[in-house]
Amino acid sequence: MRRRITAALTRRRLGGAVLLLAGLTIAAIVLWPSSDEPQTKPLPIRIVAVPPLGLGFAHPRDWKRTVSGDVIRLTSPDGTLVLLFSSPFDRPGTGFAKQEAKDALLKRFAPAKIVRDGRSPLGRAGRVQSFELVGERDGDLVRALVHVGSSDWRTYVVTMLTGENPSERRLTQARRILETVSFSKPRKI
Image 1 (tube, helix red, strand yellow):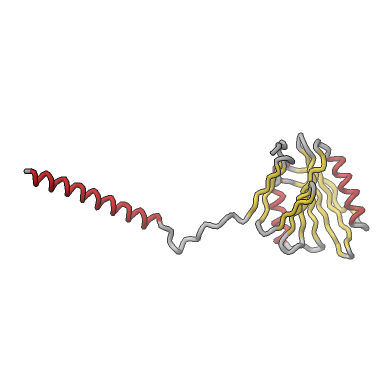
Image 2: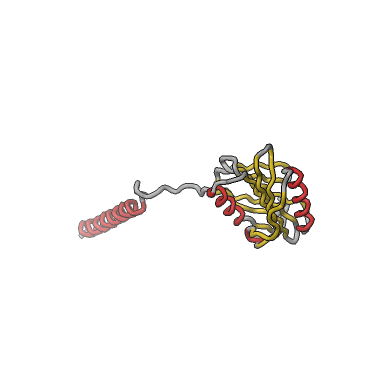
């Protein structure tokens, strides 16, 4: 009788082990990535958050980002388009900031003229004050589209600089970057 009990227990253990092994094998086959599936790649964008300024945006990874003082500069890989992000005042003041930007750009790209003055969309801020300027730098035509917006805490100026005929691809990328711009309450780090 003792042998029958031992044999029954051994069969149960062996049967349980076989079922467990079969389950693990099937799970490994189902969950193992096949070579046909695309491998996970990092997102092709970088997310930039500047808490002390309450500024955030996203841009393609292949764009070059530099910081000089209070200005963040994004340059397209081919150098044909530049986006400048700044927050010159720690208070709302879009009218004053817009006039200062106009004066500085008219002087820098002289002879220059304002070709459009109105409102343009800028990320979550909606339609903000903007103007477009055409001028010259070293004999080459320069176009500038300037957005000026503010939150309850700061004023922001976002400038897009291009040559005479930027590529549609670069303009699309720049528009998508501008769609991601957000302003929030500044925080100390």
